[in-house]
Figure 1 (cartoon, rainbow, N blue to C red):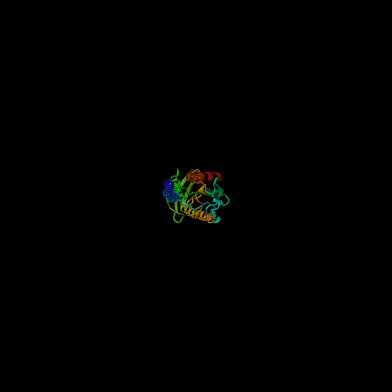
Figure 2 (figure 1 turned 90 degrees about the vertical axis):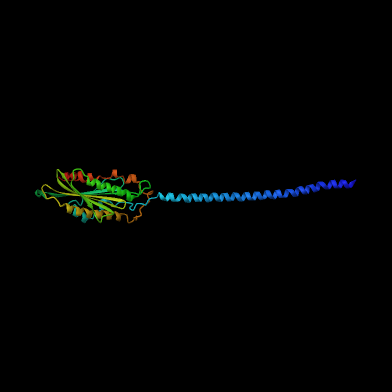
Length: 294
């Protein structure tokens, strides 16, 4: 009677052991899945990081592609000091102390200076000379382009303006060799109530700077008119000196200049509309200067 009871008692224990044994693989399988899930999560993070790095790398070329070459010259020389005393003595012998600086709210990028000379010989007449130099600097800009290109565009405009002055007679233009990166000499005659003026204009581009030199002369009150060839020779010599002064003014800051983001805004500092018009300096100013002296 007791033996059957013992068999019945052993059966539940055996059942519990078998259930426990069967549950162990499930626990191990669950642990394995948990471990695999963690490993998979780390791999996804690495992949995301790699994709981010690749995206950054692919963006870099487009950023550098928008960059422009910095302007070569970062500043301009003082306009009234671009010529030596010797040069002024040759061009405006009676006007060494007549220098008059043009008005500018940004001398680093736009400036000018003029001189006038009247050698009064009494009843024998007078010799009049007028000299003006204008300098305009262009910065490089990611939107508008490199400083050299902007300067070249303005240079072309200055040459065209000098060639089409109202009232000019016998206009003639030719390249001026050995001056800057590009240079053109324009000459013509202008008849005013004071006399006949012979105008010489030399427009030069050196890197990102445009130098415009106007020089004219006249024999007044019956004096002999000056030689146009002599006036042009003097004008070209002075233009070379002005160009050299631009390089000299930038020696300390080097030709690398400052980056576009650190320099003045091109739209403000290099707007052609704010610069002196060659036609104005070549036509109205000589007459005005002569009128004052007479």
